[in-house]
Image 1 (cartoon, rainbow, N blue to C red):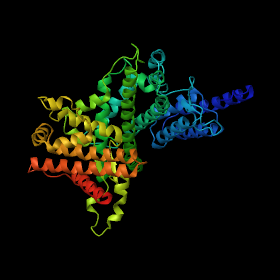
Image 2: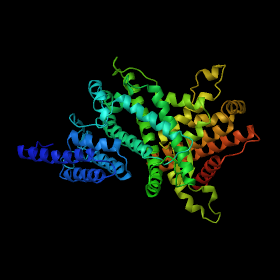
Image 3: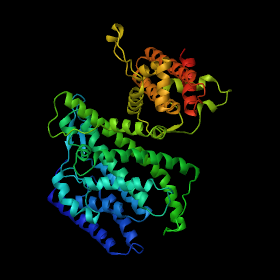
Image 4: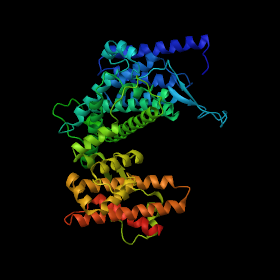
Length: 498
């Protein structure tokens, strides 16, 4: 990055002063008068001033973040959110050098670059957090400290858990967009660090510092994340039936504003769900990096141990088995089994080639971690042999998804599994695990078509056999729609690949 000349610095300072004066003037006006126009003009001015490649100052960033946190109009909240996301994209705080530079040698290793003076919406270090938590946060303009982040999550969970989700104010939308923006910041900071495979870089990520902070209740925060993900799933289902939210009797919004807010919430709910999944995946990736660093002896006393998120997820799903379908929910747009019988089977080639349920919106869709959750949950309840014989002493347990499917050939074990977690939950786990497993197989064997096809067909046959065993064990079992979808997909793939 080039150092600006003295003239450029003075020019930039003058522009910043003018923009901040515009912002300060809008703060002194009543929200229903000219303040909204002034704030929108401020956002436009910031965007225009950054078109020449010069990042805004920390004060400008803080002012835009202040607008996002305190905005009371849809235009202002969405405008400030989009500006912050765009600025983060154009002026990254952390990046790998040479990744997008065509002039750099392809053989030269990428170097992690951290812009230490860059502004961030969440404080990464304890000493800075202490300084701003009392002053900056009171004005809602400074960066959030870790306790403020937990308060935001708790408030969001409380709003989403209300019996009737009403468009009474801008608060739900505002909080969800703040959360989405913070996830963007975490992601842009963590992914380049994680790509280095260097624990000293990974441990200094904003996400790692947040999770290790004493200002948060770690386990409580993880449970709130799971609760919010499930609540968002249920709300999306409800809103698909009733596009316009009920208008609260306490609402001060105009009719047009209420309609606009209702429509905006549809997209924001879905995007918040995606952001929450991204956050959970990043935390599990961080846990894995921590585990590898520990095995290799790179951790220190400063890396205080914490319960991996995977363990918390499994415990929560075990405690409340009814949440399993919601957490792994798939909302179908159309069913493969509902397609006309007259459609030629050649049209189903996308199933065999992509090995995915096409046309399905997944709540937790990251195949790698989705499969890991399903596999660990199943093996938690699969009956292990209590007595080891000479034959079994040298046998290694196949704790994979295929290994779990093969266990269904044992009728006693299948009966025990059904008794422990219920036949419907078993169906959900098998169907979701099958989907994720096929997705991974199709990507992993892209270079070996013949070997990949054989592995996929074997997996489909084992899956169908597991369902046959499940049904023969429980004669009264009703196959759920997601189970029918999975069986239809497996049968189609076998037909196409054979």
